[in-house]
Length: 404
Image (cartoon, rainbow, N blue to C red; front, top):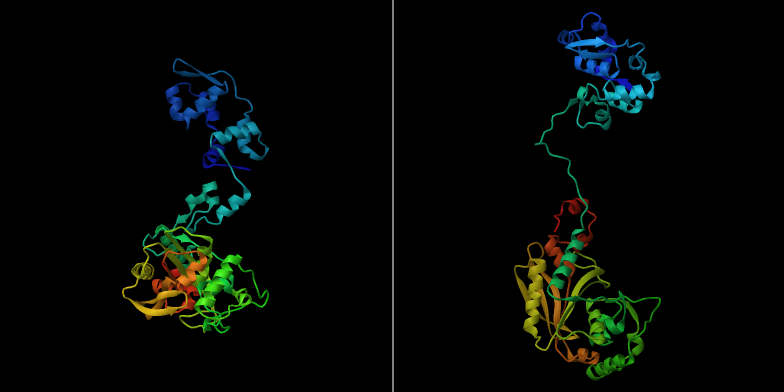
């Protein structure tokens, strides 16, 4: 559909310039005088010459033939019945414009109103000129937007992994469901140890038992247990399945299949223990563990490494080391760090793997190892005092927490 522009409506009312020129030519032929008499003289002369109505001779305009019935004039009066060629000429001359009923209708809703945003229909029809645009206040606060971002605790874990890789550590992985062999026996933890009781570890109903590794490794571990702890080692007990109770279960797997010496390895995995849930304990949690193997590894190296973890990942200002006990390390140590909110927090257990553990796995070099409660480290870094808030459903905390 087409409609007249302002210029088109003026020509409809007063006549096309070329027609008016021919009318005035009956009274006057001097070009200078005609220029003053005819509105839009240049356009009129252009179209009159193009149609073959006139020619110029010696400063005068001479009529060559009568216009007769002028199709363009008829088209201007009746757009609905106009031919395609006439409509194209009128459109090119800017006397008509193309409109759509729905666009026009939509645009007219805004005429005379104050608007914040220019609707596309106003631009298409040009009717935005008939609206009042609201002044933009650059000092006004905009609507707060909460962009998508990585959950703070997940981001913290990713950064810890990245930093360890940058320090030259290799990541280790292992199954979430382990045999007691890898979870305890390969760590030189006796089968009658209290931590292997059902009150301290989970067990599977179905299946109950899993596969043990190569017979040679099993026999070496059995010999170490019976020689060191002086009891009858039970192979069936070792094949029982349990959700991984601690991250150190992964270390003997890697030591048994062979590692680079010297070498640095870490794992950051989910662990499971039946515990009383409170602000610093959960029945499932993450642990950051690993080991460094080399001929010159000693306790001093271990303490320096633990201090670096506490300061760099947890932002610790003060740390303490305590002597501790684990069946698979000697000497053993515990590290605690002081947090502004929670006070002194137990952070990690560590030590040097005992020969009774490493030699059955084919390792003769000293191995320093650790297991860090990464959840507690994250609590210190993220400024929260309840471990359950690491996976918080508090939208305000999630939205407003800075992107680490």
